[in-house]
Amino acid sequence: MFIGEYKHTIDVKKRLSIPAKFRRELGKGAVITRGIDNCLVIYPLKEWKVMSDKLGKLPSSQVEARGFARIMLAGAAAVQFDSLGRILIPEYLKKYALLAKNVVITGLYNRLEIWDSKKWDSYKKKMEKDVGDIAGKLGELGI
Image (cartoon, rainbow, N blue to C red; front, side, top):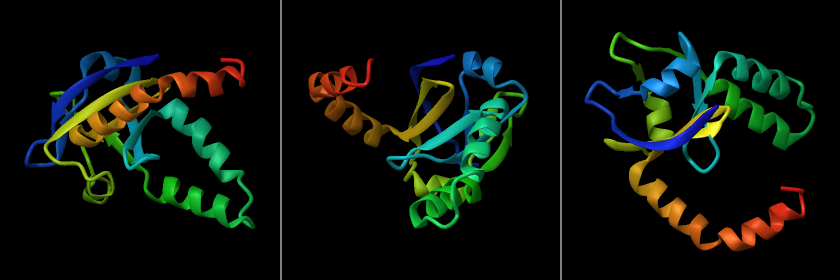
């Protein structure tokens, strides 16, 4: 299970060091793709198989389903760790997430998210401010 929030930097060669505790869970490789809210998502290979199977079963006759599957699947790239635990972030994904040098890697149960540090701080402040309302709505879903 992935949990926690870690601050890291992207080097000039577009490499990002993944925290050691996350690398152990990811194994030898993973898949990185576009996420919602202009962040990036890293899935362990097993979780990516589950997600891609679901995306592949979306009805191609529905515009939203077709578009979402395209964004997620066409934007995906396999990543492997170098000897220092770094991955290379493809330029098109770096641009999508507006990643600068400073980033935050968050653990979200079965996946990781990579956020530009300033965007993460802004997003987190908004969510923390609205946490009471959000908790009420999630209560309706049994959480």
